Length: 135
Image 1 (cartoon, helix red, strand yellow):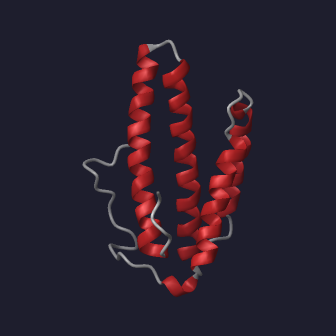
Image 2 (cartoon, rainbow, N blue to C red):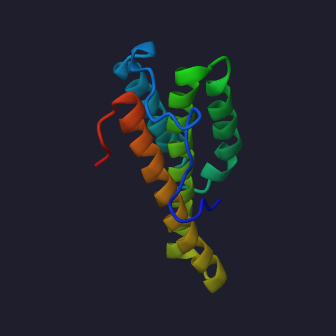
């Protein structure tokens, strides 16, 4: 989904800062690492990754159950970054292995769009939860 010229809108009615004392930096970082581990575990180089996609999506959705406020925000960002990275990985595979020029063009667009959105979400993690900037 495109968000236009880099503008992603506000959060919490335009407020830029979260109440950091609600949840520790370590907890948020742990959730982010969990999301990254999920994508590593679920999206592998072999073709069985397609069968695992439904399970991964179900697990991501379940990880949001019962959460609200800053805890929901942190987990949502961690899970969406993981999800978007999976799309980038799949699109990269399409660039390398697909025969269709249309599919390769779509894969290029997916990589560009998803990387832009990942960068925005990672910036929010830094801004709202004090996570270290992504390398």
